[in-house]
Image 1 (cartoon, one colour):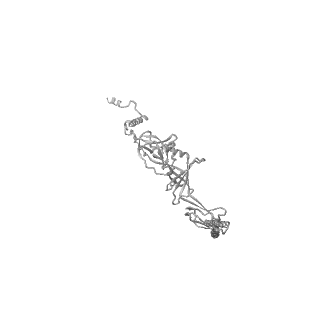
Image 2 (cartoon, rainbow, N blue to C red):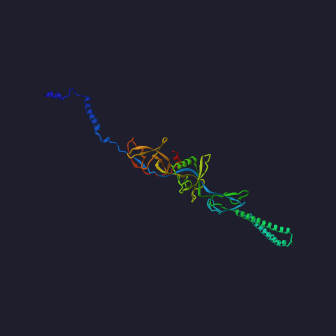
Image 3 (cartoon, rainbow, N blue to C red):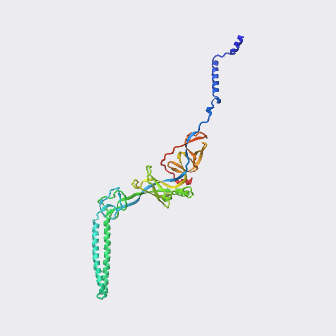
Length: 411
């Protein structure tokens, strides 16, 4: 009995060597496979939470469409100070680069010859007036004598003629005196307008006005200041067509259009100007229409000849939407944005842009009030799963070159 029981407990073929060590390895592998079965990890199979993306809520509103155009400043009035009397320049009476008033003396020319001429003309006038007095008295004496036939009719006619000639001499003398007085006045050169005077073009001791009116200085009125700029004629026509079709509204009429100026360093001039006029014709060589704006310049900060960028508000979009530029995808097929629905699903939406303003795109069509447009977290999107929209921070305002407002009519 003990022998049979011992025979059953022993393996029929004893394992020795490497085979005896393989048995525990097989058992361990079986245990590991059992632990990795799908039934062992139900918690890890749950779907991941939705990713957070930044969105902005669409809020349409009236928005002025701004066109940015190149321009140059120009003095509103320019006067050349010239010598209208010939002579030696004796004195300069102003400080170069200062502001002068209309009628303020600027130069003094030697007026001695003109004063002498004035004195001679006054003496000739006195002599003519004396002759007129004598001729008039003789004509009066001859009249009763003619009635009494005491003198011949020819003598009376000669007396009246002498009186008329004396009257003409007096009139000529008065004109000569007036001319001499004008020349004396020309010797004191004054400013024709109020403004800022530049450098003197001649110095004391120079002979001026000899043969031609010598230019002595230049006075420019820089308050207000003009800004001349041009706009493509095609853009103006598209803008008018969009306004006529009701897509845009005129910004108070062209005469009242607001004008802002950006300086060469990118800063904005603090005072706004107004549009004065636009040319009635198109330059055939460039296809541009010339416009002029008037800009207040009370402190003289702007000078004539400066290159500036003019921001002109010519139209208004009644239901425009501003979106950060990163929210819009531009391609040859069109402009699109990603809209987050109420179920958290993201969908592409085509939109119509009206240009850029303040670092943001102006959206004219394609979105409705209250919709959420994705502006951040594009790299977090995974497949077609839902997302969790969170309000994105407001973009910082920055200066940018506005796209012409008329481009909205062509899209």
